[in-house]
Image (tube, rainbow, N blue to C red; front, side, top):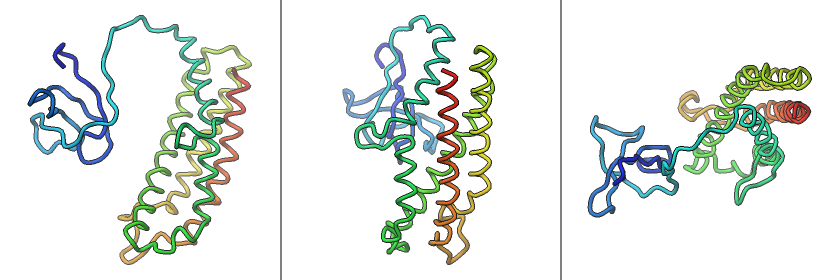
Length: 219
């Protein structure tokens, strides 16, 4: 901050979303920031101390574009096939746990409790995030395939199609993964809806495996 460089950080106000720290007070005890949750035009004091921050450092030459594109594909495969990072499941393993959790009705025995309501919200959040990320994946692969040799490009084109199919499938079934405010008055996210969501996610997982295999073939 003293060098005139802002710091990007998460969980400054309300919930863990990203914001920008631009100053401080009281010798650094109070951070001055701007987040999505700012209620005024001015920068204000952070409510919490961030648990992750990105400090802008020395500017280096960017890597070659070909290397960056290849690395992005390698990272996609790694994220899909690695079962866990620390306490978090990843990729196929995470999807399998999600599906298994939706099938465990004991988890939803007290669905009308505050905990039950949070399950509704968390499920919808993850579902919508997956849908939007797969839309982005399809567009990304379509945009870069021409920069690869013909054989690899064909595999990337097929992977893009598969991610597009996933996005459409999730869009068609998102009624089964509602946020709590999307439910009819007095309604709840019930077992029948979760069963329908599971059926959709099983199809998604199968398509995911095929898409990743296409990316591996491209590499």
